[in-house]
Every structure is written in C-alpha cells, then in structure tokens.
Length: 400
Length: 98
Image (cartoon, rainbow over all chains, first blue to last red; front, side):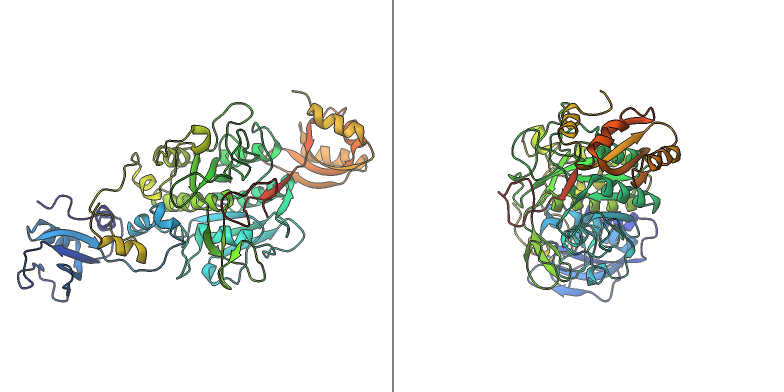
C-alpha cells in the first residue's frame, strides 16, 4: 500500500548512512480527506496547507513509513530548502535530485585548470584550498573564464548554485589573461593537480583539431587518468564540421564533453568527431549555452549580469557540469574509478537521437548517473522538489 | 611514426633561425636529458614526470639537431590552447573563442 508513495530521493535520504533522526517532509493527502482526518502518526507540529491537501512536518523514518502505509496519504516529498539554480541548467541535468539524496560533492577535491580563480568571490568562500600559477601572471583570474567555470562546477551562491556546491577547489592558472596558453603550461597544471591528490580535473580548454590523441597534452591526460584521477575535457567550439574535436579532447581515457542548449538541442559550435584515428567523440553533451555563473572581479568575460555574475556559452561551460556530476558521484561512491565514472555518465545519458559523433551517448543526467540506470523520461507525478524555486513550482503543476 | 611529424619538420627546415617552443619526449633518465640540453645551451622551461618529457624553447635548427640525439624519443610543437568559451550565444565559431 505504501509502495511508491515516498519519493526515491527521500527514501535514499532516509536509508543513507548517518541519516538524521528526523526528516523535513511534505505529506500530500488524498483529495477527499478532511483536515481533521489527516493522519499525523503522533506528529504534533504540522503546518497544514489549504490550496492543496498537504502538510509540512518533521518526522522520523518510522513515522514516514507509517504515514506512507496510511491509505489517506497519497505522496510524501522531502521538504527542501529553496533557492534559484544555476541558470536552470542544474535542474536540466537533475543535480538537485542528487543533492536531495544527500550528496553535494562535500569535501571532494576538484581542480580547475584554467585562467585562475577569483578567491574573493563569495560563492567560493572557505573552499579554495590552493591556487597555483603556471603563467607568470599570478594565480588570480585576470580573464574571467576560470572563475566562471569554477562557479558552474562548485559555486555555492544563493542566487546561482553550481553542481557540486560543497566541493573543495584547487585552481591552477595555465591560461593567460588573453585566454590562451601553451600545452606545456596545461601539462604542468595537470601534474600539480595530481600532486594535490584531487579526484577530478576540469579542462575547459583545447586546441584546434583534428587530432588522434597521441599529442603530448592528450597523452598526459591519459596518464593522469591512469593515476586514478578523472579528467573532464571540453570538446571544443569548432563545430559543426566533422572531426573538429581538438586536443586534449581526443584523448582516449578522458570524458570529452560537448554542449547542448536548454532545450536539449546540440549547440552549433559544439565540436564533432570522429578523431583522426576514427574514434567517436565527444563522449557526452551537457548544457553549455547562456550559462550564468561567477564573474571574476575586474573582468568582463561573457555578458555580465551584475558585479558577481556573468553569462557565457561554450563547451567550456558544459565541461564543469560534468566535473560537478563526477564530484557528486565520488561523494556518493568514493571507490568509483575514472573508467567507471566515464562509463556511468555515458550509459545513463539521455539519447537525443543525434549522430554519435555529435552527441556521444547523449546529454548526461546527474540523477540518472547517481541511480546508475538507463535514462528514462521523468514520470508523473513530477520528481521531488529539487531545491529550486523553478522546480518547486513544477511540483504543484498538473502532471503531463 | 618517426621522431617528428613531417609537416612540422618541414616548417622547422624552412625557418631555421626562428625560435620555437617544443615538447621533447625523453627515452631514459630525465635528469640526464636536462644535463645534455644544458650542455647544448638549450634552456629547459619545464620537466614533466608523468610522460617523461621536457618543454624547451630554441632555434628551429637546434630542434632539428636534437633529432639526432639517441635519448630524444619524439619532438612536437608546444601548441597553443584556448579557453573554450564564446562571448556571445550559440552560433559563433572561429578558431579563437573570445
């Protein structure tokens, strides 16, 4: 009788090791149940709603099970804190559902190998562990790209929230103020990141394709993966022509990421495979069009929204979505290897029906990767409130 | 495959006095390779443990001479890479991204 009433995210939160004694929940009752007849299982402090037959309360796992067994109860959701999301892309890839299951990338060490980072940005407060410079310009971000990328992967703002908002951040500045650098500088940043014992490295950069994965940078990326560190790499913005993925996106063992829009159409600029030795690339797609994220002080990359945020597009923006998902997965399943992480993200992606050398396996989905089951369209009733105002609205919208 | 890509070798031969940035893959001991490069007055910009290589900057003719060194496994251009963000929305292209 109680089957399916408790949302998967709540059930997982209840079953998680170290789960709290009480959970904040919203109980939806059947339409004909009067206020007085609403079962509460001994819970005295319930906030009843009238627009829909529901009540918010704190309940133990046992009380939740008892509520679910009651025929008067239709559904039980987790009552989540609300906030706006990272320009809706976090909701698009269902990261909030993974947060609801209790995983935010907490303390997972990630490296952003890029133009540096703005350490004064409030969305990274207390979580930047180390900054290193390989350009001679100093570790601060004098371009804006690295800060924007870091914000997508791990920003923790109230207004815009990254995919793994509790990850620990390591920043290697390998691209200069003009947004470019040499392969050797990136290789130096990769070696430094490995020495810091990070679990995942973000490379939102690349050269012009085609390539076969034997160049020095791609070879180094594969060597990093062999050391047990996941590497997420931008496919590049040289699409839509064939064989436009550039190094290190053509490396064999990395996760190469192209870009989609909010409507799950592939971005025109997203580079396409195959590699020059005939392998399929990219591996997956993720949102990379009009993404609002952190703006480094004194920079004007993208289209600034305000002092703290700016909007930008590119496979650079898609890639840190992948890095963030990997951080979430590594918190939930710390023993996953880079090969297993890559396989999981690919096998659970949403097939967009495009050519493999355009979409790889499709648009990756954080929650599906967490569940490790093939992608299925969300069923009605809609998934639990995702922690976003936008998704909370969906909760009360009619199904379909 | 030889020690160097043919098109890159031809470029070096065409402009022998030009200074080029290279990544040299080393067979054997990395420290010994750095010592040898120092003897040849070739400054080592960086050394890489993960793939046993060095980044150097030198005239193209020196790069060609290095191909004769037995410890040199391969020489390739230290190519430029770019941040993969565009300043505008979908649709832009170009070989640079800002």
